[in-house]
Image (cartoon, rainbow, N blue to C red; front, side, top):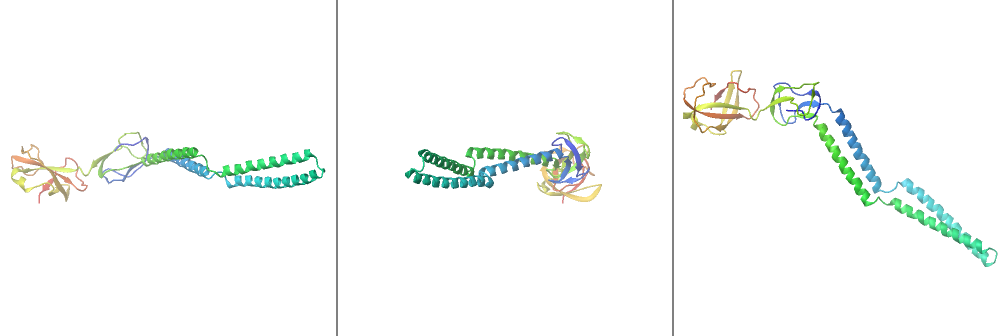
Length: 278
């Protein structure tokens, strides 16, 4: 097992000889910097979400209320200008008002009406959402920010070094308080699924065994028998090895047999064992 990144080892969840299983914590690297980066990524996503929501709903109600108040004031001014124009028209028919006064009232009414139309148009525009291309731009920014957030979450998760397999801790190279670099070995794991026992049987007993058959394995240091299943039967006869961990070696020609353990065992590589075939 190697370090996935640079960092200080804050804690270790295993000791020599520990049997670890998938998702068991092996070591924890410091993650202060990665936490800051994750918080920054989350804040950016929230900011862009708020920006998109604001753009989709147009101006704030307070801003629209100001324009509507202005529009109402302009409508009152238009009503007064229309009354003034009617009054001048009556006076004009009696030669009590000049043409200049009448023309001035007409222009004033048209100016007020034009200003009112501009205000009404502003209200309509403020109530609209932003342009589609602008909304699409913000949406793309949100997607990029979310990807950055997911990457930050993945990075901080990698600070917790976890086992992917069921194995036995054979060696520990880096401990709590030590600084490790990317790719540096921190411990040695031995796969329990690959632990096997190798033994030999004489040719006259070869027909009594088959693949998948269970055998019992014990050692001098442990009287408890462990079960293993035969996974390999050699098809080639060979002479008895000069160094064979067996109490008796009576046959000249033997066959190599391998059996794998289904569960974790306390045996170590190279340890002499006794194999019993039921």
